[in-house]
Amino acid sequence: MAIRAMLPQEAAEKAIRKKPLFILDVRNPADFADWKIEGERFKHLNIPYYELIDGVEEILEQLPAEEEIVVVCAKEGSSVMVAELLAEQGRNAAYLKGGMKGWSELLMPLKIGDLKEGGELYQFVRIGKGCLSYMLVSGHEAALFDATRMTEVYTDFAAKMNVQIKHVLDTHLHADHISGGRAIAEAAGAKYWLPAKDAGEAAFKYEPLEDGDEILLGSSVIRIEALHTPGHTAGSTSFLIDDQYLLTGDILFIDSIGRPDLAGHAEDWAGDLRKTLYSIYKELSGELVVLPAHFMIMDELNADGTVAKKLGELFEENHGLNIRDEEEFRLLVTKSLPQQPNAYLEIRQTNMGMMQPNAEQQRDMEIGPNRCAVR
Image (tube, rainbow, N blue to C red; front, side):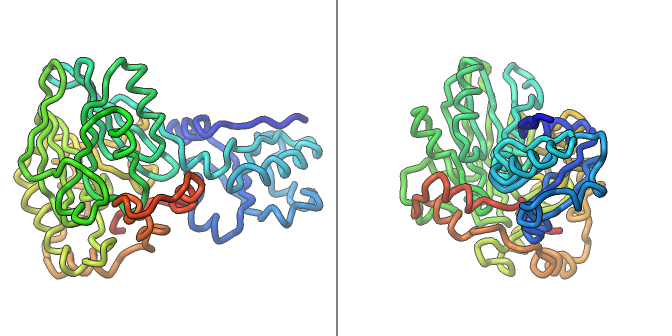
């Protein structure tokens, strides 16, 4: 039987629509345990490819007889080999195009909604890495928030929408993925905005974001207001968009809250994090739709694949917003932390312009799941 290449987009749509998929992951067990393709109805079997070089006969009983089997490896090569061996045994086999590298780099643009006075807001879901970025469109102008390093996805989308990117903004200095913000701003002739308190050592020019700054966009004059919300970083900044949407960066997620330790200041920033969540956000309208910069688990995705929820609902449902005791909160955000992101120090230096890794080095630096949240 012939094998086919399954595109990461197809796997992502199956995950969003809660469709079944059987995955034979042929990476090392440690890599599989750390990070895999998630889906509510996905089934996995992890057998390292080196155990299958001489044939797949011994694992056939562990595989579905009629269902398609999608083989996944790090970059594609090994999965093609194993899928061919399965096909020789009469199994319906496919391989994931680009492997986990392709899964990590997939970006899906989804519409969040319309603005009151005209304009549209789009969310770019990086489903394999849990990153979320945004494009705000008004007339023939656009603003971009928390862009990833896959810059062509945004520039191609802007060209398709017939808009010019005028402003590129990062909510904070990212530590889990490499920002594409500066590169996009340079290519588009746009302004690149970065919180001043996060960019003290930046090796490039930028527009310093300060609390209360306002940016007007497009023919409908959409208002973007910067709100200093420290805790994940010293300069972490949220954005209020036309009093409808609240971009929270890595401070507040749908099912968790941000971690304060990625710059080595967990104890110092825990109080800032609590003040942001329990005082600054508490004073805002509960009708604001929260749009974070990351998601942690597939359950945070809505039925259409977007990640969004009203602030008032989060104050009712999100455990991180409902810890009355300050000491208990401090212990949660300083002691109960997951493993730090892969190469996070190098990623911070890259985002500061102090390192210039090539494309393949950047991919390797980002390998692994999102780890920006307190669990």
